[in-house]
Image (cartoon, rainbow, N blue to C red; front, side, top):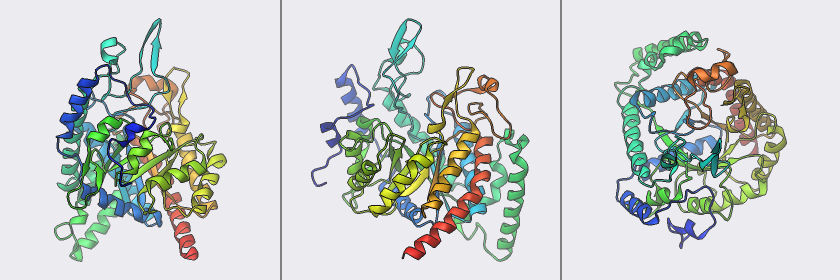
Amino acid sequence: MKNWKPNSWRKYPVKHVPSYENEKELNQVLSKIKSFPPLVFAGETRHLKDQLSQVVDGKAFLLQGGDCAESFAEFNPDNIRDTFKVILQMSLVLTYSASLPIIKLGRIAGQFAKPRSAPTEKQGDKELPSYLGDNVNGIDFTEKSRRHDPKRLFKAYSQSASTLNLLRAFSNGGFADLKNVHLWNLGYIKKSPQAKKFKELEDKIADALAFMDACGINSDFNRRLKTVNFWTSHEALHLPFEESMARIDSTTGECHATSAHFVWIGDRTRQLDGGHVEFCKGIENPIGIKCGPTSKPEEIAKICEAINPKNEKGKITLISRFGHDQVEKFLPKLIRRIKKEGLNVIWSCDPMHGNTIKSTTGFKTRPFNKVLNEVKNVFAVHQSESSYAGGLHIEMTGQNVTECTGGAKNISEQDLSSRYHTHCDPRLNADQALELAFLISDEIKKNSNYARNAIKAAS
């Protein structure tokens, strides 16, 4: 990697990178962004990698969640706060039930660009470029809106910086204090079937904190009781932007992607000889690799080796997204190949993308029972393969949307139109996300205990 540079990806074939009419304008924008401050710092990404190394050994669990695609229109401090609340709620459920530290990683503060199945979209007799995310073009079906506009990258950077600023304040300013757990409830969740369960958990935690306080252990003396580490992530899809945000750490000489703490390569862009893999070879950030039904185990192993030649723990997260009825067909072969090569990876489950269907009412949706079944099937396969399912990767929001059917409130296909707000794919609402956490917490604990015993036996 001595000859690698942030622009080395330009020598390789690349998919799903937007094409701009005015290259000069694009280069001016990128040059300006290159002079902007980093959004995250090298020390933070190293800290995250250290935490992720614990997941490889079954000693922690990775919870990754947030928007399918962030939008300029929905940018609002309340929306950021509410998504943060849900991730805190989910992590509390999983920590208490599974007895594991939960690493909290948001799909936030940069998750704008989206790959699409077709370069153009047709409505009636009119055909226009597809919507590729708010940092590329607009969602309105007009020629002006769908133009690839490089100046949108300025707004994406600004929104990401503002989001990170607010998240850091929430994480370290007292909002995340366990004493304030009662503040984490969203208004509409108080009427949900999960409210009683969460209140019972909240009461148990309050009792535990009261005991600890009586022993002199409280947030006045222990900072960890009132702060959380909250990390950001997005798909490293828009390579020109990622290149402009790649910076050299002055203390180590290493190159870091400073657009997020963690970036991933999508199922459509993980070509071994492609530009996205090439870019990720040279950055020190933890890297996710999406694995779908088209992925070949030997190819995934080679990508892992190319990006992580030192086989460093915490560097690579394999995010499986097969579909609830395809897990048993594809996942065992992948696990066996990775184990055969002796590669250190985190195994995470994305139960969203493989379970997207079109409803009878015309909306894209994801049935909650299929999402749940994929997670359970992934845990079962890992247990049968003496492996540890160490992560959950979901698209969710703190807003009271109706985009995924099912769940305890039994959202129907007819309900979808009432609050369908996503700019791209359907998301679990807070109620469904919290329900999922409760339903899988026992599975995580069982899988963790099994994995740790297997690791001990192997060593």
